[in-house]
Length: 271
Image (tube, one colour):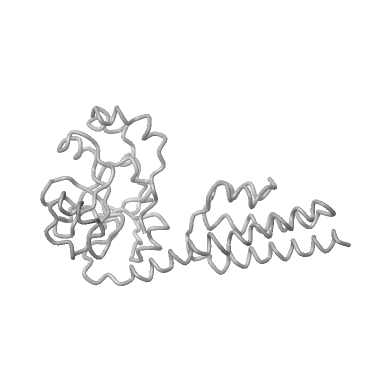
């Protein structure tokens, strides 16, 4: 009898997991790989979800585990119940906090008062002459006073943008690659161009020639709401492939860091 009770409770737990995923289906949060494996120990249908590692993985995991629980009895049903309770607890703590944080960021970014440039905007730096693309912004400078003094920031109370600088420009202008830049709005001049950066496809899914902008990934689209539709959107392609750009591959700094950078996972975006 205890086994049957455990089985019924386990099925109810996985229903709760599926309900949670439906409630938060609009938020493209990320799942930690270890959590995906913990939630979906059975292979079969759940295995397909292991490659997603984002919000879309939860429903197939919940359904697959629900179906598997129907066949379990005794100790296996008890283990499924324990596993399901751990999964629901994980969703309602760690991932509920993540989802809430992303919703708060989105609400804040819906107000673009004073912010001239959108995520995906390509520009040239007015002072230093490198090209870049915007992947996020703050309403005013969020760096400390030491950084502001070192960078000779004169007007911190203006929007500042998180940018990926063109690596060919950085090699030419600075003698080596730069991974990110934090640029004041006053220094941004929009241009019609594409850029080269090894992490570009971590932030952007495609490029639109008609709109002269990169189209951000789902997470950035959610956190920075805007009109991102583009009929001519094409994959980022060689813009993120350093091997296609001899001037970057020839840089001493690039050769020095090649091994490490090949393994590095870049942050998706800063909230």
